[in-house]
Amino acid sequence: MSILDWIEDQKKLKLLNAPKYNHPASDGSKGLWTRCDHCGVILYIKHLKENRRVCFGCGYHLQMNSQERIDHLIDVGTWRLLDETVSPCDPLQFWDQKAYIDRLKESQERTGLQDAIQTGTGMLYDIPIALGVMDFYFMGGSMGSVVGEKITRLIEYATQEGLTLILVCASGGARMQEGVLSLMQMAKISGALQIYQSCANLLYISILTSPTTGGVTASFAMLGDLIFAEPKALIGFAGRRVIEQTLQEQLPDDFQTSEYLLHHGLLDLIIPRSFLKSALVETITLYKDAPLKRSGNIPYGIQQNVNFITEEKNRRKLSKKTLEYENSEFKDSENTNLRFFMSFQNILKIARSINSWSKK
Image (cartoon, rainbow, N blue to C red):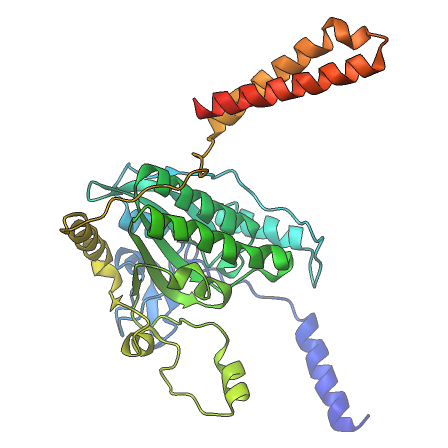
């Protein structure tokens, strides 16, 4: 090993062992000042929030958390969360520099969310909508099993209720800690959207914010009937450096920006944050009042979602049936074959009764 190599190794070790500095205003919830990512101007956070996190100097749209976006879009007092208790697990027992389960706990404590998205229903100037908002502050907004499941349930609920669907995307892509389980969400969400758009003939609006990359871009972010974006948002699939090294070409300076994608026909409109709510209302109203509309239908076999109340009722009825069976005369029967046959028959009865209760 040469002296230069030894010096480089010492520098790397020093950086690795150095204490990490947590910026007090990294999520905008603490501290008084922050810096614009585009022009570097120092901004007072209180005034920045009042301006919807748009820089006063250059108009650059800084990142917002999911709750701020919901407060900006939804009418006061009309927001109702869906599936807020669904939380992720660690099926692969993934471990890199830190255990995946520890990263989840850390993100949950910092953001107050169970995962990287909030889904629910609300009113947009008295128009009912189904809304999903991704939160980049939760592990980079990465799409894991819970994110995919919540989006799919939201789409299915909007399909059953006939609601306009709006998804606000802010993500680094699929969550690597969940492996193929996170990649499966792309197909699952796309399948639910196919029924929502092609069968039910309902309106889906995708809003791309900075950044929207990876598996999210490759699936539901680009499947909207209308695709809106914020100014100067970073939108793409692979990273700029990877593409340059693969193509052996120098890419334009504005590559993977919303303006570049709009120029090449991948976006429908770029809307500043201050006009987003009004633009959404006008768009939904236009589609609602459009002539020659075709009524959609939900294919056979697509059942209604079972909510928590129905689940709890079914669980209690199942427990009651099980208790009745345990106290029945067949429990103490000496005939094993008869006991097995009757237990199987009881299971079928319970399954049929639960199915009928769910339909009710």
